[in-house]
Image (tube, rainbow, N blue to C red; front, side):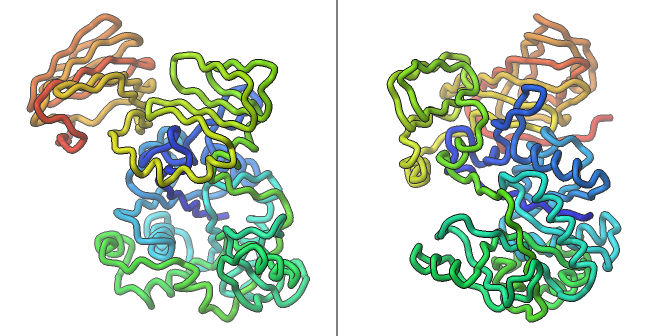
Length: 437
């Protein structure tokens, strides 16, 4: 089974745990059988592999999310990187070309496309496999998953099937309605359109060539920023006559707000948190190294991270976005392919960061034009390369790098550093990468 997971989002609605780099699918709040926590993307990836161990998974995403994906899923997962945002049709066209030209997937093989972040159980992934098998039959050019609605939602478009059979031709599509109109659609047997569908690879590849002038994946990638922004629904789905819908009646939740996300939490509190006995319906997620105490609260979410602190009534938390839009600050925490960093202190001419490198990983060999850096090793061991000179490092060692100096660090074990950046102009763009000779 070939699966393309669409991974987007800027993280506004789940502030302060998410930001422009760390979208909601990377937040670790789901408890595993071992007692550790995993993110949405880790949960979905694990569930797919459990259902089909041979599944070929490709994540279509922006370049800002690549490091987080590698951090959480490893280096083996396929990634179709969008150079910039151009909506779902260009993203799916690029991912399809990537499968064909880079991964070598045959034009006759079926591909399933779905969002990376629904909260679902294993029956959903069995349904994805059935969706691919239905596409294999060639009865339709597109096979959609229609989700049996549990309430008259205003957030989803609706699919009206021609029959009540498990697999039916599609009669028509309806835009996102108001609640009363949604009730009318449901009375007609309508299903939610959750953006899940399957097709033979050649179908979307041919559609892409019809609508975009390109030769292959590399050519499409190079001109991606010139493509028209258009959704897959508008460009393809709503114009296709040979189209079917397969019903799915299992659990399917969009955890897009704090209110819905807390419904899926198995623990009321993650991190250092205390609630007294009079609290009801309170959820706390604390990523700071200080305790949170909640007393006498009801239906409240409390979330604390280096980005900020949220204390909100659960219902009101759905309206967070315009307030977060007004907050302008640098990224305070991010996962990288080699580990993670957390900003500890920000001054006018200095920045202090705690850096964690995973065992066996290293940074790029790089330099900075406008700042000096100092590394202090606080745990683990490894080695540095500074202007070509190697040095073993361990706890207590200090490494100094002047502006223009080329440097990197390798972690033999998990390695933690305190990095102090010093300069008149400190920003993320002041970085030049070099090959390590």
